[in-house]
Length: 170
Image (tube, rainbow, N blue to C red; front, side):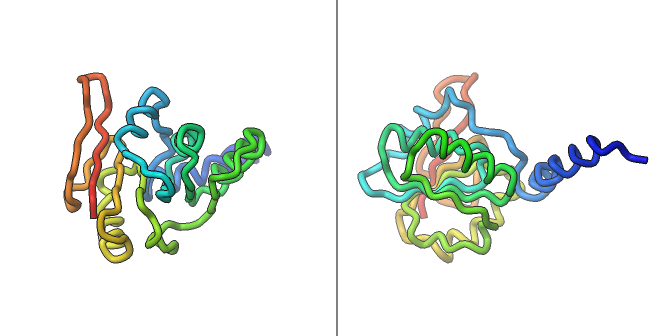
């Protein structure tokens, strides 16, 4: 007979396992790269930013602390969604909208910037959606992984130790 704790643990880990084999595993953006990502975004006042399935919303909160732009954070994993909602209540910020939804069922047409950290074999799934929904000049920031089907504007990797950040434009 299975131990009750084991069953609970497996139930809690199931959404992370599904994410790992479907679109992206839960690996947060490194905090040491937050400022570099913000600089690369070249945010303008009132631009709307989407962070898509990136885990712990660290980059969203960093952007909000430094720029105060409107941010929409979309996460399919319900447990990460709840975790980040609780963190948000504790930090008492109000300019990040949290959505627990499948990105492929959400309209991104009002985005100015999209930040994502997905596995390369899954980025292609977004290309068609981006090309169909996003307005011209929308910027896509991909942490670590390339999206060869999109128009590359910049690749940022200042040193060998740094991870690549790719900037694309529709």
